[in-house]
Length: 585
Image (cartoon, rainbow, N blue to C red; front, side):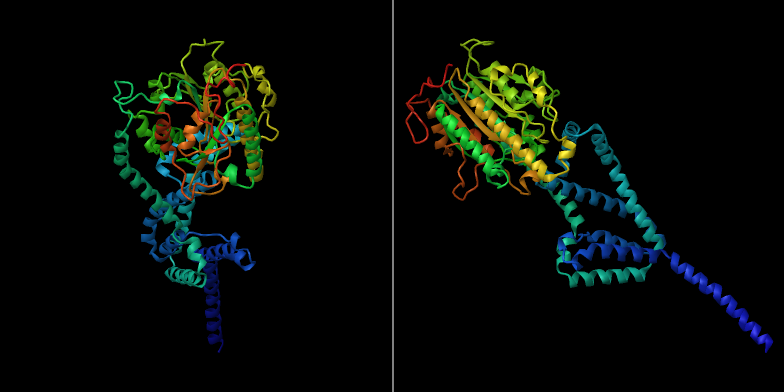
């Protein structure tokens, strides 16, 4: 008996360590840790649904779940070889998805990966000009560190799953996932194929760019102005202007939202009505309308190129093809008509080889502007100073230039309504006091630094409104200054502001305003599709506005024939075609 009892005791003693080892193994099992992590993440993602806040529920892509189940299902030896390629694929897909979401948030449009990579440098310059050096350096480091960090995180997760090697857990996980999707019809809409869609869109977009290139090259070759200036067979263009100066002003981030969004429209439309009353008293005829811009939230150069070239330049690839071509622009049309041409772009701060393509006689970039004041964050100088230089150095018929100068065509980029929209100076009533711009140092310190302002979306939108109103009021004041020669002024928005201001959207519609002391010039553009007044019409007869690329041909057609007597039309006073009521001081 004693022998038997001791044997049973010995067996029991050996069983307890085995049970302890099993419990310890269970606690340390990789598959258990993975299961608990998956359950915790799922609970966190779906908890908002239980408290009636579905908008707070996380939308998790299905691809990482599929990869996890694959690594769990494979034998450990085979799973080890799959970790690196699967981690790399998930990392690339996740980064593309993150960039796509950022593009929608900031620009209000999809990411064009292979074309938008060239925006990294301008974006960093904007950050460095708007935020502290520490934040700018932090953003740069984040861009360098984030990709390898994401790869490392996916690799670590893959190694844990590979070590778990639990086929039954993989099968159970797949069943739970499919059951959850069937029970919650909104789940596939929220999560399915996010990463796949992001990658597929970028691949599709890149293939389309390659396919469109030969088609665009064919468009480049079909230029009605080819040979202009070299024995051009047709009549010389722009005879209908009869020597009036022409100023084309692009207003940064001035889009349809400024005139229709209830957050901005009451104030901006009110400002335009005040300016219109002043222009009416000054004897200026007015007309306005809408144009479609090829870009949204940035890349203003695409809008400038579309309007000047008569081609739809909506990608960087098209821009590159355009500036390497012999396409004739409005610049050459004005030069053939005897105009001196000038380009005023105060935001150009370094050598710009593409300037040669635009064929302007004179360039006024930052270093040629003579500005003695400080920059306003990213904005190199206030718009009022740029307009003062335009008037003093180009449009004046006396002073630095004599009264016998040729007519001037000037293309000007106004930039005070460019992000970060702070600081903003007041409009200086006495234009003669502007001088070299040193007085603008008084307002160069923003009341709220950009790095703090941009933490609050409502504050950013309020700053945008202030900046845009400043530009419009500056233009209104400039238009009321005495003109020494007849003039046609065209004011065009370049594109809608970014999505943080204008909201998400696919299109980009901008206002165009024209005014002149010669009503017959405005009448020609009104007959080409613009409407009377400084406020663009509410609608376009249920049709889309014309593209910016249509402007070149419409403008050339409008002023092809020599001017005749200026008829009087409603809202366009026409009893003084000589412009003497406005010229002279």
